[in-house]
Image 1: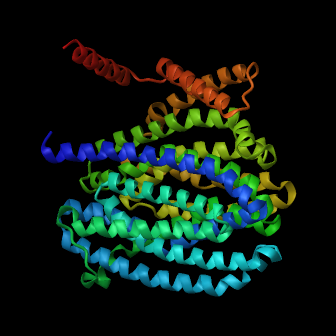
Image 2: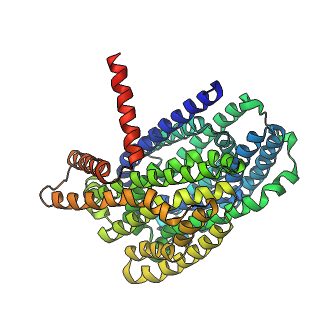
Image 3: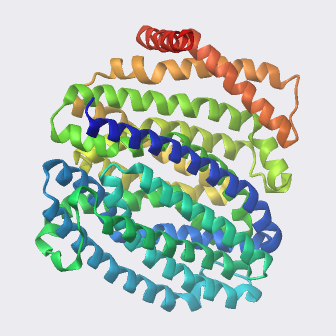
Length: 512
């Protein structure tokens, strides 16, 4: 292994460690801040905050896919050594998103006087919600610009630096949010906190890029419109995918706010937040290998692509399966101990969200593979149909069965549309049979999960967890059982031999 590849390996390992540190800190911030926010704001104001956060998520799509496109073409151009072309692309994208950001901020300011009417905000929260909405628009404008800069670092496979910036951001948001709540700034303070954190991250990105990885020196004078036209098809398809994704996973808040009012968003948001955070555990695996997949596609290395895809899918399911068992068995107890039993949306909602998480564990590596190859057209169309069906089903079902209807709308629409695309298209694009895909990636983690779920169900009848300590112990037991079962029934001969060789090396090193 030469010095360059050794350095890349160290950076990759550091990126993995920082990614999981980011997950731990995000989880800690969520666990600590959610009950604090509910205590200081109350259910209605908290629901308004959740709505504004959802709207901000939608608004970040107005980079029109440039962020992901910059990451992909950074990996491609840097691999080809065309850093001058990359500099022009980054400059062009930066100027464009700065203009978009200014327009977005102006639109938020114009819409702010009407948000209380749109979302049934009580009169006593009307002035505060208007100011908070304007601040949300400023944060979106800053984040659009920061997204382009951050994706340059990501495209260079410097996931370690990229994730460190995310850690700085989440810690800054948590500290400022807690401080502003204690000082009595309420909803406005919760919107100022992420805005200030975004400023810190943007300045950090600029500092890192000024140092110039691999000779890259960005400057706005190198902007060229033809470079944007070159990436426009891929960028716009990514934008459409982002829109459909936001409709799928963030429209629930809007439907609930419109039909049931902001106060009833709280129990759904709590369950959704808990389940959504668990997806970070496996989605980061796909995130970290995205630039590598771009390079493998550029080199037409189908063999390595197949092995990498099988590995990432299997690891994603290995992570998510025991987490799903934990959420089903101990999720209600955790939510009750965390924010109170009155804020639990019900077992039906939790089960549906957990099933969606399992589907994500299969679909995230597939979407990553299609995005890295540029073959995202079919996925785009399926996600558009998925999003439209989701909204229609959610509206129909929420009026009949409440919170559960919104969750079911999301699950049913996905099963009817995109689920089949993410199963078939990635395998076809890299010459992988479905039989091989299921046998090597999907079946082993799920078989171990079924055995573990049965054992956990038997144990849960004898032991009831109520405190955080008891829940934590129960979680450890689930993961230990799953690990043992997987070693017995899921590990392949190749993996078993690899583990034995690794243990042998450790033993030899200790003897010496």
